[in-house]
Amino acid sequence: MRKLVLSTACLLLWLLTACSSSTNIHSEPAPGFGLSTYRQFAFMDVDTDLEKTGRDYQGHVHFLKQELARQLELRGLKQAPTTEEADLLINLGIVVDRQVQTRETNIISDPPRYIGQRRYTWQSREVEVGRYSVGTVSVHLVDPVQNELVWQGTAERVISDKPEKLREQIEKGIERLVGEIPS
Image (cartoon, rainbow, N blue to C red):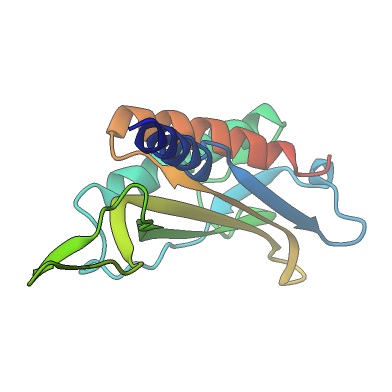
């Protein structure tokens, strides 16, 4: 019984660390890029396959754009009314991938099965423990005059299914991502 409790505690600890709540940020500026050389930004169109998106997808994209605009305005830029008036274009990429979390059975926590005639068998196998979503947002800053990518960044994390928690995660992730843009 003690081994069962110990292995269950280890499994819970593994689940908590495997579903870490940190956001992975990666950014890469072009040589000599500085945000202070730009005045106005605009968003490029986001292409979506509406059949594959969830019912709340457009609302989340709108909120993501609002939060990105807010963070850039805090850094001194203004949102241009059209892409033609902007000296910095933003291309967004959004991917939400549904994942299955599994664990491997072991002889301690998963007892052998009876197969008849006083015979038992045990075999290691993968069993589903849960499902979760991983969200990735990529932001590309493009100089429209030179038609060149001047900065790119990605933020990736396990995302919540609860709308209010997801909005909080978007706010914090975009704040960290925009913080990586060189001045």
